[in-house]
Length: 382
Image (cartoon, rainbow, N blue to C red; front, side, top):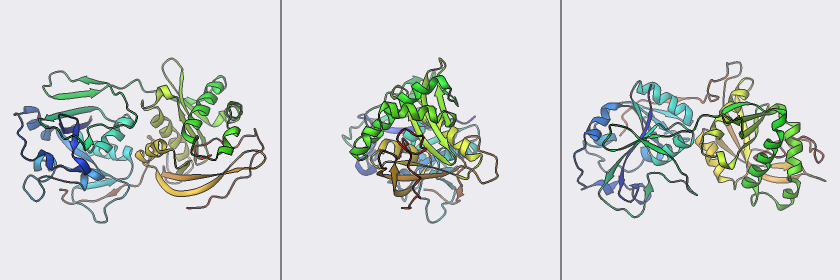
């Protein structure tokens, strides 16, 4: 089975490109002979490339060494981008969804590696729990600024295990056990409510009108958690501890929340995939809403193939009258009407290309009385 490998040449101070993605920094450098580097190209069956890397700087442009692996690679590639090229590119297939891109790249790679090119794409794969290995070739130079091998605002600790028998910096990504996603149980409503409250305020405080905040107290989320228990899925660890929750109603992902201690462990991705799969049983497209200032959530959804359809105003339920909240509506195709649901919860349309690669207004729901169940009241958007 194919594995996802993030390989890159890195400066001694941790950069894989200079400021603005400049790759000219590799010109004139002398490297020690490396059997690992020499053999790598034959172990790669497909490239998974981010848009910035695909259209970015190539120090060997217009030479025989232009392209991946100094021009030695001549296999298939998958370009991951929300903005496909206007014209087809030979040898390159285009995907707008991360999971679909990885799935297609693995199909093309067969039993060889999918080599990830691009720091942002590699980070998205890592955060989605898809990245298997990391290989770094260290160059004898300082850059001082540029694109880091791995950059995560606020920091993130990722454990790696040295692969036996390798002489380079080649590591396997250590993953925690995958969480179990199942329907919430009645006795878990307190844990769900507490997690919901904390996640909602973490993503909304400072980004919604101040007058809404008093209406989102712990008692509010406790009522909602009990009322919406039948529409709630939870992710639990091997000890049964609730790590995250998602609420689904019709074609909407109403709320997704992950415990702070369980973030960046693939829990959110597992919950979202389960929500997409449930929606796909009856609807072709899923949607959700996010407040503009919740950039972490927006990056998460966009990295998993959700499309920002633009701003709209949502009347968040409150007493005595709703509070208008600006949100961004996100959508994602999940299945064609009448089709069987996707096994991964994600069925984006694939655009393929072959060649040489070198505000909408939403109808406001009837506002709920304070304390009454409302599908959107504590959601990502309101």
